[in-house]
Image (cartoon, rainbow, N blue to C red):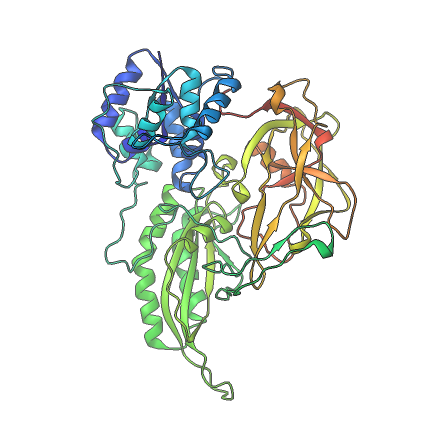
Length: 538
Protein backbone atom coordinates (compact mmCIF):
# COMPACT_ATOMS: atom_id res chain seq x y z
CA UNK A 1 0.00 0.00 0.00
CA UNK A 2 0.94 3.63 -0.45
CA UNK A 3 0.76 6.37 2.17
CA UNK A 4 0.53 10.05 1.21
CA UNK A 5 1.54 12.70 3.77
CA UNK A 6 0.06 16.14 4.23
CA UNK A 7 2.28 19.08 5.16
CA UNK A 8 1.03 19.21 8.76
CA UNK A 9 2.54 15.80 9.54
CA UNK A 10 6.04 17.15 8.92
CA UNK A 11 5.45 20.50 10.63
CA UNK A 12 4.02 18.71 13.66
CA UNK A 13 7.32 16.85 14.05
CA UNK A 14 9.16 20.18 13.76
CA UNK A 15 6.91 21.49 16.53
CA UNK A 16 8.15 18.76 18.83
CA UNK A 17 5.27 16.25 18.79
CA UNK A 18 6.74 12.90 19.85
CA UNK A 19 3.65 10.88 18.87
CA UNK A 20 3.79 12.14 15.28
CA UNK A 21 7.53 11.44 15.04
CA UNK A 22 7.18 7.89 16.40
CA UNK A 23 4.26 7.11 14.08
CA UNK A 24 6.19 8.46 11.09
CA UNK A 25 9.24 6.37 11.98
CA UNK A 26 7.07 3.26 12.21
CA UNK A 27 5.51 3.68 8.78
CA UNK A 28 8.88 4.57 7.20
CA UNK A 29 10.31 1.34 8.64
CA UNK A 30 7.30 -0.71 7.50
CA UNK A 31 8.49 -0.99 3.91
CA UNK A 32 5.40 0.71 2.51
CA UNK A 33 5.69 3.45 -0.11
CA UNK A 34 5.55 6.76 1.76
CA UNK A 35 5.28 9.97 -0.24
CA UNK A 36 4.45 13.61 0.46
CA UNK A 37 1.78 15.26 -1.66
CA UNK A 38 3.06 17.65 -4.34
CA UNK A 39 1.04 20.57 -2.94
CA UNK A 40 2.31 19.82 0.58
CA UNK A 41 5.92 19.62 -0.62
CA UNK A 42 5.65 22.99 -2.34
CA UNK A 43 4.20 24.56 0.81
CA UNK A 44 7.16 23.32 2.86
CA UNK A 45 10.02 23.95 0.45
CA UNK A 46 8.75 27.00 -1.43
CA UNK A 47 6.27 28.81 0.82
CA UNK A 48 7.65 28.27 4.35
CA UNK A 49 9.48 31.14 6.09
CA UNK A 50 12.82 31.77 4.44
CA UNK A 51 15.00 30.26 7.15
CA UNK A 52 13.05 26.97 7.02
CA UNK A 53 12.71 26.29 3.28
CA UNK A 54 16.03 24.62 2.56
CA UNK A 55 16.01 23.00 6.02
CA UNK A 56 12.71 21.26 5.27
CA UNK A 57 14.06 20.17 1.89
CA UNK A 58 17.10 18.62 3.59
CA UNK A 59 14.90 16.97 6.24
CA UNK A 60 12.68 15.28 3.62
CA UNK A 61 15.73 14.21 1.63
CA UNK A 62 17.37 12.61 4.67
CA UNK A 63 14.10 10.83 5.52
CA UNK A 64 13.91 9.59 1.90
CA UNK A 65 10.45 11.10 1.54
CA UNK A 66 9.74 12.33 -1.99
CA UNK A 67 6.69 13.28 -3.98
CA UNK A 68 5.06 10.47 -5.99
CA UNK A 69 6.91 9.74 -9.23
CA UNK A 70 5.63 11.17 -12.48
CA UNK A 71 2.95 8.95 -13.97
CA UNK A 72 2.04 7.30 -10.66
CA UNK A 73 -1.40 8.86 -10.89
CA UNK A 74 -3.37 9.89 -13.94
CA UNK A 75 -4.52 13.40 -14.74
CA UNK A 76 -7.98 11.98 -15.46
CA UNK A 77 -8.35 10.48 -11.97
CA UNK A 78 -7.26 13.72 -10.33
CA UNK A 79 -9.55 15.72 -12.58
CA UNK A 80 -12.49 13.45 -11.78
CA UNK A 81 -11.95 14.04 -8.07
CA UNK A 82 -11.85 17.83 -8.53
CA UNK A 83 -15.04 17.65 -10.60
CA UNK A 84 -16.79 15.56 -7.94
CA UNK A 85 -15.65 18.00 -5.26
CA UNK A 86 -16.84 21.08 -7.12
CA UNK A 87 -20.31 19.72 -7.82
CA UNK A 88 -20.68 18.16 -4.37
CA UNK A 89 -23.73 19.52 -2.53
CA UNK A 90 -23.64 18.25 1.07
CA UNK A 91 -26.76 17.07 2.83
CA UNK A 92 -27.61 18.64 6.17
CA UNK A 93 -25.01 17.69 8.77
CA UNK A 94 -22.71 16.02 6.20
CA UNK A 95 -19.15 17.07 5.19
CA UNK A 96 -18.95 19.77 2.55
CA UNK A 97 -16.57 20.56 -0.27
CA UNK A 98 -12.79 20.65 0.13
CA UNK A 99 -11.14 24.00 -0.49
CA UNK A 100 -9.59 23.99 -3.96
CA UNK A 101 -7.18 26.91 -3.44
CA UNK A 102 -5.56 28.76 -0.56
CA UNK A 103 -7.50 31.21 1.59
CA UNK A 104 -5.01 34.05 1.07
CA UNK A 105 -3.83 33.19 -2.42
CA UNK A 106 -6.35 32.09 -5.03
CA UNK A 107 -3.56 30.55 -7.16
CA UNK A 108 -1.96 28.30 -4.51
CA UNK A 109 -3.27 24.71 -4.66
CA UNK A 110 -5.35 23.91 -1.58
CA UNK A 111 -6.39 20.79 0.32
CA UNK A 112 -8.36 19.45 -2.64
CA UNK A 113 -5.10 18.88 -4.54
CA UNK A 114 -3.76 16.77 -1.67
CA UNK A 115 -6.95 14.69 -1.47
CA UNK A 116 -7.16 14.33 -5.27
CA UNK A 117 -3.61 12.98 -5.43
CA UNK A 118 -4.35 10.49 -2.63
CA UNK A 119 -7.49 9.30 -4.42
CA UNK A 120 -5.73 8.97 -7.78
CA UNK A 121 -2.87 7.01 -6.17
CA UNK A 122 -5.28 4.80 -4.25
CA UNK A 123 -3.18 5.81 -1.25
CA UNK A 124 -4.05 6.19 2.40
CA UNK A 125 -3.96 9.86 3.36
CA UNK A 126 -2.33 10.98 6.60
CA UNK A 127 -3.38 14.47 7.56
CA UNK A 128 -3.77 16.08 10.99
CA UNK A 129 -6.50 18.34 9.64
CA UNK A 130 -9.62 16.61 10.97
CA UNK A 131 -11.90 18.65 8.72
CA UNK A 132 -9.95 17.65 5.61
CA UNK A 133 -9.88 14.01 6.70
CA UNK A 134 -13.67 13.88 7.08
CA UNK A 135 -14.38 15.64 3.79
CA UNK A 136 -11.81 13.59 1.87
CA UNK A 137 -13.24 10.35 3.24
CA UNK A 138 -16.71 11.47 2.21
CA UNK A 139 -15.42 11.78 -1.37
CA UNK A 140 -13.84 8.34 -1.42
CA UNK A 141 -10.35 8.90 0.01
CA UNK A 142 -9.04 6.34 2.50
CA UNK A 143 -7.48 7.86 5.61
CA UNK A 144 -4.50 6.26 7.36
CA UNK A 145 -5.60 4.24 10.37
CA UNK A 146 -3.97 4.08 13.78
CA UNK A 147 -3.08 7.78 14.00
CA UNK A 148 -6.44 9.33 14.81
CA UNK A 149 -5.39 10.25 18.35
CA UNK A 150 -2.52 12.49 17.21
CA UNK A 151 -3.35 16.19 17.38
CA UNK A 152 -1.80 19.14 15.58
CA UNK A 153 0.38 21.44 17.70
CA UNK A 154 1.01 25.18 17.48
CA UNK A 155 4.56 25.39 18.87
CA UNK A 156 7.31 27.22 16.93
CA UNK A 157 8.88 25.04 14.23
CA UNK A 158 12.43 23.81 14.86
CA UNK A 159 14.23 21.73 12.25
CA UNK A 160 16.91 20.80 14.78
CA UNK A 161 14.18 19.38 17.01
CA UNK A 162 12.60 17.52 14.08
CA UNK A 163 15.91 15.90 13.14
CA UNK A 164 16.48 14.84 16.74
CA UNK A 165 13.03 13.26 17.04
CA UNK A 166 13.49 11.41 13.75
CA UNK A 167 16.93 10.11 14.77
CA UNK A 168 18.82 12.08 12.13
CA UNK A 169 22.28 13.59 12.46
CA UNK A 170 22.03 17.23 13.56
CA UNK A 171 23.18 20.01 11.28
CA UNK A 172 25.17 22.64 13.16
CA UNK A 173 23.73 25.57 11.19
CA UNK A 174 20.22 24.53 12.29
CA UNK A 175 20.72 24.01 16.01
CA UNK A 176 19.37 27.45 16.88
CA UNK A 177 16.88 27.82 14.04
CA UNK A 178 13.90 28.03 16.42
CA UNK A 179 13.30 31.60 17.56
CA UNK A 180 11.46 32.11 20.81
CA UNK A 181 8.84 34.86 20.81
CA UNK A 182 9.92 37.90 22.80
CA UNK A 183 8.14 38.81 25.98
CA UNK A 184 6.40 42.10 26.45
CA UNK A 185 6.05 42.80 22.73
CA UNK A 186 8.70 45.55 22.63
CA UNK A 187 11.08 43.57 20.46
CA UNK A 188 10.24 42.98 16.81
CA UNK A 189 9.68 39.29 15.99
CA UNK A 190 12.65 37.50 14.55
CA UNK A 191 12.55 37.62 10.79
CA UNK A 192 11.22 34.65 8.96
CA UNK A 193 9.07 33.24 11.76
CA UNK A 194 6.07 35.09 10.38
CA UNK A 195 5.16 34.68 6.74
CA UNK A 196 5.30 38.06 5.10
CA UNK A 197 2.00 39.48 3.93
CA UNK A 198 4.08 41.39 1.50
CA UNK A 199 3.22 44.97 0.73
CA UNK A 200 3.18 44.83 -3.03
CA UNK A 201 4.15 48.39 -3.57
CA UNK A 202 7.02 50.60 -4.55
CA UNK A 203 9.89 51.87 -2.49
CA UNK A 204 7.63 53.65 -0.05
CA UNK A 205 6.10 50.28 0.93
CA UNK A 206 2.99 51.51 2.72
CA UNK A 207 1.72 49.34 5.55
CA UNK A 208 -1.82 49.00 4.19
CA UNK A 209 -3.74 49.11 0.94
CA UNK A 210 -6.49 51.59 0.49
CA UNK A 211 -7.25 52.78 -3.03
CA UNK A 212 -7.64 50.49 -5.96
CA UNK A 213 -7.27 51.43 -9.59
CA UNK A 214 -7.91 48.83 -12.26
CA UNK A 215 -6.16 49.39 -15.56
CA UNK A 216 -5.78 47.15 -18.54
CA UNK A 217 -4.07 47.78 -21.85
CA UNK A 218 -6.07 47.91 -25.03
CA UNK A 219 -6.81 51.57 -25.50
CA UNK A 220 -6.94 54.65 -23.36
CA UNK A 221 -10.70 54.70 -23.58
CA UNK A 222 -10.90 51.15 -22.22
CA UNK A 223 -9.18 51.91 -18.91
CA UNK A 224 -11.35 51.57 -15.85
CA UNK A 225 -10.40 53.65 -12.84
CA UNK A 226 -11.88 53.54 -9.39
CA UNK A 227 -9.98 55.44 -6.75
CA UNK A 228 -10.92 55.72 -3.11
CA UNK A 229 -8.42 56.90 -0.52
CA UNK A 230 -4.76 57.07 -1.39
CA UNK A 231 -2.47 55.93 1.43
CA UNK A 232 1.13 57.10 1.50
CA UNK A 233 3.72 55.22 3.49
CA UNK A 234 6.54 56.68 5.57
CA UNK A 235 9.48 58.00 3.56
CA UNK A 236 12.47 55.65 3.55
CA UNK A 237 15.90 56.69 2.41
CA UNK A 238 18.09 54.52 0.16
CA UNK A 239 19.62 51.41 1.69
CA UNK A 240 23.15 51.82 3.02
CA UNK A 241 25.19 48.64 2.69
CA UNK A 242 27.41 47.39 5.46
CA UNK A 243 29.40 44.21 5.84
CA UNK A 244 32.21 42.48 3.93
CA UNK A 245 32.63 42.93 0.21
CA UNK A 246 32.63 39.92 -2.08
CA UNK A 247 36.38 39.60 -1.51
CA UNK A 248 36.39 40.88 2.06
CA UNK A 249 36.98 38.99 5.28
CA UNK A 250 33.70 38.01 6.91
CA UNK A 251 35.20 37.67 10.39
CA UNK A 252 35.08 41.46 10.84
CA UNK A 253 31.35 41.72 10.04
CA UNK A 254 30.10 41.62 13.65
CA UNK A 255 32.28 44.52 14.80
CA UNK A 256 31.74 46.48 11.62
CA UNK A 257 28.00 45.97 11.90
CA UNK A 258 27.74 47.67 15.28
CA UNK A 259 30.24 50.40 14.46
CA UNK A 260 28.73 51.30 11.09
CA UNK A 261 25.19 50.95 12.38
CA UNK A 262 25.66 53.30 15.32
CA UNK A 263 27.68 55.86 13.40
CA UNK A 264 25.22 55.85 10.55
CA UNK A 265 22.21 56.40 12.80
CA UNK A 266 23.82 59.08 14.96
CA UNK A 267 23.82 61.36 11.96
CA UNK A 268 20.05 61.65 12.47
CA UNK A 269 20.15 62.19 16.22
CA UNK A 270 20.90 65.63 17.60
CA UNK A 271 20.07 64.91 21.22
CA UNK A 272 22.12 63.03 23.84
CA UNK A 273 19.12 61.34 25.43
CA UNK A 274 17.88 60.04 22.08
CA UNK A 275 21.36 58.73 21.30
CA UNK A 276 21.43 56.81 24.57
CA UNK A 277 17.97 55.34 23.89
CA UNK A 278 19.08 54.16 20.47
CA UNK A 279 22.34 52.66 21.77
CA UNK A 280 20.49 50.77 24.50
CA UNK A 281 17.97 49.32 22.03
CA UNK A 282 20.59 48.37 19.44
CA UNK A 283 22.74 46.74 22.15
CA UNK A 284 19.72 44.61 23.06
CA UNK A 285 18.99 43.55 19.47
CA UNK A 286 22.54 43.17 18.11
CA UNK A 287 23.31 39.76 19.67
CA UNK A 288 20.22 38.19 18.09
CA UNK A 289 21.04 39.79 14.72
CA UNK A 290 24.58 38.43 14.93
CA UNK A 291 23.33 34.97 15.93
CA UNK A 292 20.90 34.77 13.02
CA UNK A 293 23.48 35.87 10.44
CA UNK A 294 26.13 33.50 11.83
CA UNK A 295 23.65 30.58 11.78
CA UNK A 296 22.79 31.07 8.11
CA UNK A 297 25.58 32.60 5.97
CA UNK A 298 23.14 33.18 3.10
CA UNK A 299 20.91 35.37 5.26
CA UNK A 300 21.17 39.16 5.42
CA UNK A 301 19.40 41.65 7.66
CA UNK A 302 17.83 45.00 6.97
CA UNK A 303 17.68 47.37 9.91
CA UNK A 304 14.93 50.01 9.86
CA UNK A 305 15.23 52.85 12.36
CA UNK A 306 12.12 54.91 13.07
CA UNK A 307 11.91 58.38 14.57
CA UNK A 308 9.06 60.64 15.53
CA UNK A 309 9.62 64.16 14.40
CA UNK A 310 7.12 66.89 15.15
CA UNK A 311 6.29 68.89 12.05
CA UNK A 312 6.88 72.10 13.98
CA UNK A 313 6.34 75.63 12.70
CA UNK A 314 6.85 75.82 8.94
CA UNK A 315 7.85 79.50 9.30
CA UNK A 316 10.57 78.72 11.85
CA UNK A 317 14.17 78.11 10.87
CA UNK A 318 14.69 75.96 13.97
CA UNK A 319 14.51 72.24 13.23
CA UNK A 320 12.63 70.00 15.64
CA UNK A 321 14.27 67.15 17.57
CA UNK A 322 14.13 63.70 15.96
CA UNK A 323 12.90 61.42 18.74
CA UNK A 324 14.14 57.85 18.42
CA UNK A 325 11.21 55.40 18.43
CA UNK A 326 12.23 51.86 17.58
CA UNK A 327 14.30 49.49 15.46
CA UNK A 328 12.78 46.88 13.17
CA UNK A 329 14.99 44.06 11.86
CA UNK A 330 13.96 41.96 8.89
CA UNK A 331 15.82 38.94 7.53
CA UNK A 332 16.07 37.68 3.98
CA UNK A 333 18.31 36.52 1.18
CA UNK A 334 18.03 39.94 -0.51
CA UNK A 335 17.18 43.47 0.68
CA UNK A 336 13.70 43.21 -0.85
CA UNK A 337 13.09 39.88 0.84
CA UNK A 338 14.26 41.23 4.19
CA UNK A 339 12.24 44.43 3.81
CA UNK A 340 9.08 42.38 3.26
CA UNK A 341 9.87 40.44 6.42
CA UNK A 342 10.33 43.67 8.38
CA UNK A 343 7.10 45.18 7.07
CA UNK A 344 5.20 42.02 7.95
CA UNK A 345 5.89 42.77 11.59
CA UNK A 346 3.67 45.14 13.54
CA UNK A 347 4.64 48.80 13.13
CA UNK A 348 3.63 51.74 15.25
CA UNK A 349 2.50 54.74 13.23
CA UNK A 350 0.92 57.76 14.91
CA UNK A 351 -0.85 60.73 13.33
CA UNK A 352 0.55 64.21 13.76
CA UNK A 353 4.17 63.16 13.33
CA UNK A 354 6.45 62.50 10.38
CA UNK A 355 8.38 59.23 10.35
CA UNK A 356 11.97 59.90 9.32
CA UNK A 357 13.33 56.50 8.32
CA UNK A 358 16.91 55.27 8.19
CA UNK A 359 17.81 51.82 6.99
CA UNK A 360 20.93 49.82 6.29
CA UNK A 361 21.50 46.38 4.84
CA UNK A 362 23.83 43.86 6.49
CA UNK A 363 24.94 41.73 3.57
CA UNK A 364 25.03 37.90 3.72
CA UNK A 365 28.40 36.25 4.07
CA UNK A 366 27.65 33.82 1.24
CA UNK A 367 25.68 34.10 -2.02
CA UNK A 368 22.09 32.81 -1.85
CA UNK A 369 20.85 29.52 -3.24
CA UNK A 370 18.26 30.29 -5.93
CA UNK A 371 16.03 27.49 -4.59
CA UNK A 372 15.48 29.47 -1.40
CA UNK A 373 14.08 32.54 -3.12
CA UNK A 374 10.32 32.99 -3.31
CA UNK A 375 8.83 33.40 -6.76
CA UNK A 376 7.62 36.94 -7.53
CA UNK A 377 3.92 37.87 -7.69
CA UNK A 378 3.08 34.56 -5.93
CA UNK A 379 3.58 32.82 -9.27
CA UNK A 380 3.66 29.04 -9.57
CA UNK A 381 5.79 26.83 -11.80
CA UNK A 382 4.26 25.64 -15.08
CA UNK A 383 7.19 23.59 -16.36
CA UNK A 384 10.94 23.05 -16.61
CA UNK A 385 12.77 24.07 -19.78
CA UNK A 386 16.01 25.00 -21.48
CA UNK A 387 16.83 26.99 -24.60
CA UNK A 388 16.52 25.67 -28.12
CA UNK A 389 20.19 25.20 -29.16
CA UNK A 390 21.47 28.34 -30.79
CA UNK A 391 18.58 30.40 -29.39
CA UNK A 392 20.02 31.30 -25.98
CA UNK A 393 18.41 34.72 -25.94
CA UNK A 394 16.43 36.76 -23.43
CA UNK A 395 13.90 39.50 -24.01
CA UNK A 396 14.58 42.88 -22.42
CA UNK A 397 11.40 44.01 -20.69
CA UNK A 398 10.43 47.12 -18.76
CA UNK A 399 7.56 47.84 -16.38
CA UNK A 400 5.96 51.27 -16.65
CA UNK A 401 3.05 51.29 -14.26
CA UNK A 402 -0.30 51.54 -16.05
CA UNK A 403 1.32 50.64 -19.38
CA UNK A 404 2.30 47.30 -17.85
CA UNK A 405 5.12 45.12 -19.18
CA UNK A 406 6.57 46.14 -22.53
CA UNK A 407 9.53 44.90 -24.55
CA UNK A 408 12.23 47.44 -25.27
CA UNK A 409 13.68 48.43 -28.61
CA UNK A 410 16.44 46.01 -29.67
CA UNK A 411 14.92 43.77 -27.04
CA UNK A 412 16.78 40.51 -27.66
CA UNK A 413 19.86 39.91 -25.55
CA UNK A 414 22.15 36.99 -26.43
CA UNK A 415 23.60 34.97 -23.56
CA UNK A 416 27.18 33.67 -23.58
CA UNK A 417 26.63 30.15 -22.26
CA UNK A 418 29.81 28.52 -20.92
CA UNK A 419 30.96 25.37 -22.70
CA UNK A 420 29.39 22.22 -21.31
CA UNK A 421 26.59 24.05 -19.49
CA UNK A 422 22.88 23.46 -20.13
CA UNK A 423 20.83 26.35 -18.74
CA UNK A 424 17.70 25.15 -16.95
CA UNK A 425 14.84 27.42 -16.01
CA UNK A 426 11.24 27.27 -14.88
CA UNK A 427 8.59 28.98 -16.94
CA UNK A 428 5.87 30.39 -14.70
CA UNK A 429 2.14 30.82 -14.64
CA UNK A 430 1.77 34.62 -14.85
CA UNK A 431 -0.42 36.37 -12.28
CA UNK A 432 -3.82 37.59 -13.41
CA UNK A 433 -3.24 40.84 -11.54
CA UNK A 434 -0.39 42.65 -9.85
CA UNK A 435 -0.52 45.50 -7.37
CA UNK A 436 1.94 48.33 -7.00
CA UNK A 437 2.08 51.60 -5.15
CA UNK A 438 2.43 54.90 -7.00
CA UNK A 439 0.97 57.58 -4.74
CA UNK A 440 -1.97 55.20 -4.32
CA UNK A 441 -2.53 51.47 -4.60
CA UNK A 442 -3.09 50.38 -8.18
CA UNK A 443 -4.23 46.98 -9.39
CA UNK A 444 -3.14 46.13 -12.93
CA UNK A 445 -4.51 43.22 -14.94
CA UNK A 446 -1.84 41.15 -16.67
CA UNK A 447 -2.79 40.18 -20.22
CA UNK A 448 -1.46 36.70 -20.99
CA UNK A 449 -2.28 33.74 -23.22
CA UNK A 450 -1.06 30.24 -24.06
CA UNK A 451 1.51 29.70 -26.81
CA UNK A 452 2.18 26.46 -28.69
CA UNK A 453 5.45 27.67 -30.21
CA UNK A 454 7.80 25.92 -27.75
CA UNK A 455 9.76 22.80 -28.73
CA UNK A 456 8.15 19.77 -27.01
CA UNK A 457 9.88 16.95 -28.91
CA UNK A 458 12.64 16.12 -26.44
CA UNK A 459 11.05 16.37 -22.99
CA UNK A 460 8.67 14.61 -20.65
CA UNK A 461 5.60 16.60 -21.65
CA UNK A 462 2.00 15.73 -20.90
CA UNK A 463 -0.10 16.36 -24.06
CA UNK A 464 -2.39 18.57 -22.00
CA UNK A 465 0.55 20.67 -20.76
CA UNK A 466 2.42 21.37 -24.00
CA UNK A 467 1.53 25.05 -24.10
CA UNK A 468 3.63 27.80 -22.52
CA UNK A 469 1.91 30.74 -20.79
CA UNK A 470 3.21 34.03 -22.22
CA UNK A 471 2.60 37.67 -21.32
CA UNK A 472 1.50 40.08 -24.02
CA UNK A 473 4.23 42.69 -23.89
CA UNK A 474 2.93 45.39 -26.19
CA UNK A 475 0.89 48.15 -24.58
CA UNK A 476 -1.92 50.16 -26.11
CA UNK A 477 0.51 52.87 -27.23
CA UNK A 478 2.97 50.33 -28.70
CA UNK A 479 0.58 47.92 -30.44
CA UNK A 480 2.47 44.95 -31.84
CA UNK A 481 2.27 41.22 -31.11
CA UNK A 482 5.30 40.50 -28.92
CA UNK A 483 4.96 37.92 -26.17
CA UNK A 484 7.40 36.30 -23.74
CA UNK A 485 7.33 33.75 -20.95
CA UNK A 486 8.25 34.71 -17.41
CA UNK A 487 11.19 32.46 -16.49
CA UNK A 488 13.07 31.79 -13.27
CA UNK A 489 16.47 30.04 -12.98
CA UNK A 490 16.19 26.42 -11.82
CA UNK A 491 19.76 26.24 -10.49
CA UNK A 492 22.54 28.53 -9.34
CA UNK A 493 24.54 28.19 -12.57
CA UNK A 494 21.60 29.45 -14.60
CA UNK A 495 20.97 32.19 -12.04
CA UNK A 496 24.56 33.39 -12.49
CA UNK A 497 24.17 33.22 -16.27
CA UNK A 498 21.00 35.33 -16.12
CA UNK A 499 22.84 37.90 -14.01
CA UNK A 500 25.04 38.68 -17.02
CA UNK A 501 21.96 40.09 -18.79
CA UNK A 502 19.74 43.00 -17.88
CA UNK A 503 16.93 42.39 -15.44
CA UNK A 504 13.36 43.66 -15.79
CA UNK A 505 13.64 47.44 -16.02
CA UNK A 506 11.68 49.18 -13.27
CA UNK A 507 12.92 52.77 -13.21
CA UNK A 508 10.29 53.95 -10.72
CA UNK A 509 10.92 51.00 -8.37
CA UNK A 510 7.21 50.16 -8.49
CA UNK A 511 7.98 46.44 -8.15
CA UNK A 512 10.88 46.78 -5.73
CA UNK A 513 9.22 44.62 -3.09
CA UNK A 514 8.29 41.82 -5.50
CA UNK A 515 11.73 40.15 -5.59
CA UNK A 516 11.94 40.27 -9.40
CA UNK A 517 15.77 40.32 -9.49
CA UNK A 518 16.29 36.81 -10.98
CA UNK A 519 13.18 37.01 -13.19
CA UNK A 520 13.87 37.03 -16.92
CA UNK A 521 11.82 36.76 -20.13
CA UNK A 522 12.12 34.33 -23.06
CA UNK A 523 10.19 34.16 -26.32
CA UNK A 524 8.24 30.88 -26.56
CA UNK A 525 9.88 29.80 -29.83
CA UNK A 526 13.27 29.83 -28.02
CA UNK A 527 12.05 27.42 -25.32
CA UNK A 528 12.59 23.65 -25.30
CA UNK A 529 10.37 22.05 -22.66
CA UNK A 530 12.06 19.41 -20.49
CA UNK A 531 9.20 18.56 -18.15
CA UNK A 532 5.56 19.64 -18.00
CA UNK A 533 3.71 19.73 -15.79
CA UNK A 534 6.57 20.21 -13.38
CA UNK A 535 6.90 18.39 -10.09
CA UNK A 536 9.81 17.66 -7.78
CA UNK A 537 10.34 14.12 -9.03
CA UNK A 538 13.63 13.43 -10.81
